[in-house]
Image (cartoon, rainbow, N blue to C red; front, side):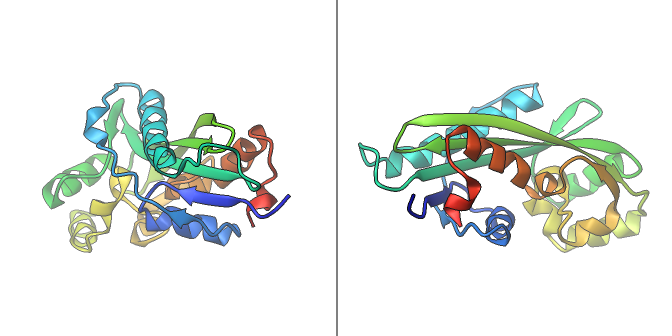
Length: 203
């Protein structure tokens, strides 16, 4: 089998770098899907639906009408943090980010990431969700204010980047580490296999 083509339907730099670190060099196409059009109190349902909508939006643009000589996969993802039964995405502003961190500190949250993988040629889709528990440190108001001032929390679902400065404020995790960054690499490998390919087809 020839080298497969892989499209990441997300402008997330963290997800792109995760794929590159795993030997997959994706073409990046932002889905431009309106996330506010989807609502759910169930975090699994929410992230799976959003991931699928993003992937379908991109797949519709690249669909070639017939199966090509090489596999063409489109990946859509979405992440949220659930804390005390409440779902959180990216904070709207610095004030919201600081208030969120005052709730998060010395607390445990669940980071949900929905993954939707579409085989464009075969028109087959696999949708899955990965969950990782995140234990936050007991950080001071000053640390919260100075972390938010960096701007990093405003770009992240859950208001922190574990692969950035936010990693200083996470005591431990239970589950998949890369899932907290925005994409579960072990889950992706299994999803690729469900579509009939080997992950190494995309190296």
